Length: 473
Image 1 (tube, rainbow, N blue to C red):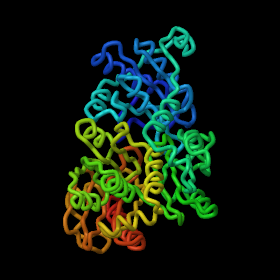
Image 2 (cartoon, rainbow, N blue to C red):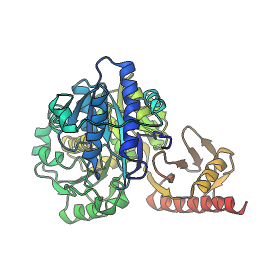
Image 3 (cartoon, one colour):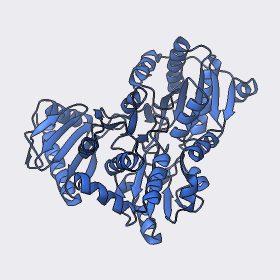
Image 4 (tube, rainbow, N blue to C red):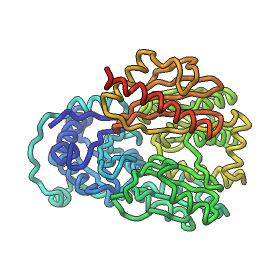
């Protein structure tokens, strides 16, 4: 059995390859060791998403916990990551475990660890658990059903807890009375039952059980949402909300069927919460986010902090400080008044509330932001490269070999997490290896979509040219 490493958000692996019952036992035993050393009579909350064998894997993990003396509360059906996080907080669990691979392709599954505060376990806790994972595991003989009968494992309705929280913290009456026409694409993920219960009038897509996700990774980015985009335009919807496999990430479309990325959503939330609702606090964004966030914070006199990529770094700050908005480029966003967890559905409802209260379209709200910080566009290219070439490119970045990128002079470079190259005219390019997938992520920002697309194409060409040198050497 190989070494098990946690990425930016838990452990993920291909089902039947590294993601096996034996390896799940090892990870769970490492978690048990951490719990017993840090809590008296520990208890965990366990949920799972809509992937292949999700329930089987969750029940196996529950069995390992229960046989090792940990009290288990397990979801009575599939549950989103925000549902598990919220339930862990409300039920005062010591940890929450989610069997999910989030936005990864359907052949993956994973294991996320959540804290009692209702968000990702902080990096030091994750590192501690990882260090305790044994090289081998013992056999487990008790049946899941027997452990349920003995009370060592108890079912818990996490969706009901989540729905009650939404009703207590969102203006559901306003949302239901709004004339806004809303569409929701669950991408076959674990959020598929919730929107219809909050917004009965919503137009739904991919809200049924399909572990193959129709062959598309359940990541709510524009290229994966073309069917949803066409539906929005055909039905004349005012807002389209999409969430990923475990419903903690969001993708948004405006009334024209144009994709509104996370950078714009973060800016909209800062503007709405501070200027419209009169709230204050620190704004936290990850290294791959737009520089416009800092610009808006300076205008409003709000503190701003940049973290490494991974919501766990944002969560750690939210646990200790008053954070107004915390967000990352990949669609994971959290706001004050909720648990310190990214939540695609909660953020989608907040955007709808923003539109309903201001009486403005999403396009109108974005134009309002542009009037403050200037217009911009953003794009990302996930470049699949053999590992030697990928590492070669990263080493080139580390050694300062890129004086120009995409035919433009590099003005300065930041290396907080990956490498961000600042170019003329407030443009930038970032190169970073994924922490959960075998890809090299290329990010870019420029004034228009056309300029972003061209910049990405030129930068990828530069990278491929450099990467080819590893074979010529």
